[in-house]
Length: 228
Ligand code: DX5
Ligand code: ZN
Image 1 (cartoon, helix red, strand yellow):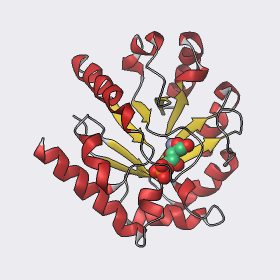
Image 2 (cartoon, rainbow, N blue to C red; image 1 turned 180 degrees about the horizontal axis):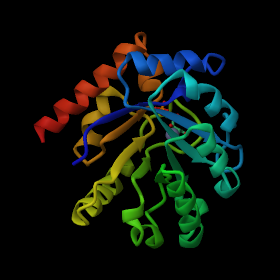
Image 3 (spheres, rainbow, N blue to C red; image 1 turned 120 degrees about the horizontal axis):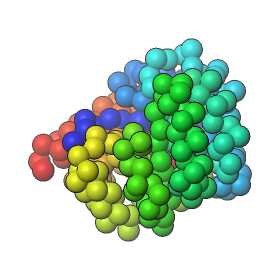
Image 4 (cartoon, helix red, strand yellow; image 1 turned 90 degrees about the vertical axis):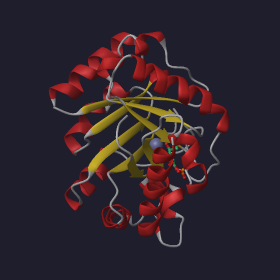
């Protein structure tokens, strides 16, 4: 089982002050910064693009975990890599085996990591199961993409467990990232089903003390892990 990692989603902070959002992640000891890119087509919101990722890059050394909720990621993947993304996560809903292979080749040629995400109602497609060893992070969405601050959809839990089991059976060290509505109250449900990378938007940035919220999530997750 991979170590617990906390990935604050800066979408939940004041979008006019993303520099502070990144600083909070650093001060709180986060492992990676989760950057939600939404294009208004794949999901009903528009956030930011490669220019913002590039502008934030010199402001911290944390891993940039870029979650591309966009149609046609082929058009933008290289731009996000050049902007400083370390992990580029694509949605399974807009790919097939062939287009995944091309993107995988591109990301790996730059020495970066490939993630694959699924929306709450999407099962891991066969082409992805056949390519599991090429995916460093499987991102399981527990809200419909678009906005921070939604409640976690607990009906996704059986799928989370199945995906974790599949990874374990194959003997892979794939990170299982859970994204959407993560709060201290549900961390145990996620960790006990194999989630190890916890994305938290409102669960960090809407708290009174966001810096402290990061370590509190970590403590909760580690305690859950120990209790298993
Ligand atoms: C949803 C994004 C999530 C979201 C997380 O479209 O992918 O990363 O911002 O925010 P919370 O934790 O508030 O659900
Ligand atoms: Zn996300």
